[in-house]
Amino acid sequence: MIKLGVNIDHVATIRQARRGREPDPVWAAGIAEMAGADGITVHLREDRRHIQDRDVRILRETVRTRLNLEMGATKEIVAIAVGLQPDMATLVPERRQEITTEGGLDVAGQVRKIRDAVRKLQKVGIAVSLFIDPVAEQVKAAAEAGAEFVEFHTGRYAEARGEAEVEHELGTLYEMAEMGVDLGLRINAGHGISYWNVAPLVRMAGLEEFNIGHSIISRAVLTGLAQAVGDMKKAIREAEQEQGVIG
Ligand code: PXP
Image 1 (cartoon, protein in one colour):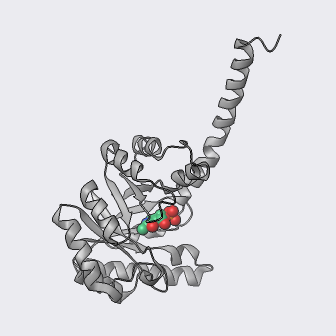
Image 2 (image 1 turned 45 degrees about the vertical axis):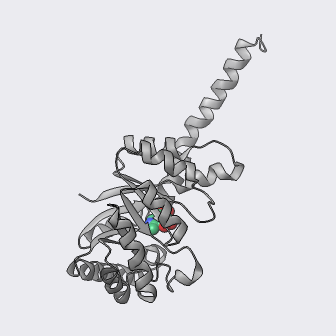
């Protein structure tokens, strides 16, 4: 069965809009797990624009499934990951020069640097995944770098318009997943996956896990809105009654 890793970065993005305490991504992780998430994914960015050090520290304690830390292959973040010991580290591009034309990590252009980071993480027992475009040279480079997993960037597929374009992007993902499996890599997929486009992706060879964030959090905002409005109305009514404001 293909697993679902839920990316909760957007919960932290909403919190950071006010630099306050809510919504707490730690609570979101617990709710996602209780609803059946197989893993929790967070991206600790160098600029800490959403997820904070405090979040990853607490999540390491509270996540009961698996914690997947998305991270740039920088010295600072690799050291944090080594100390934190997430179950998996997914190396993603952090800076412009690390990004290939389509958006994944340019492993082919920096095999040695990536291999060093992979080794440091693996040495302390962290499984490593590389977030790459579905491009042959990147798949080969990921195997060369010694990663156990690749996460295929599904953004181009998600953005494809028209049947021919969609089929083309899907075909590429199918082909590259097969190549990855042949090279001994384990396969994950993520970025831009939604309720509308997820179905055909389940046919990717060897696919073990989806990492999905935006679409799930977007839906949660809408499916949770009626309850949230009702709860606030109730809070106001109760305050009025308790304080004798209405007769
Ligand atoms: N996988 C990786 C490596 C990501 O960086 C992200 C977030 O951009 C996702 C998956 C989730 O993407 P989305 O939020 O579009 O579902």
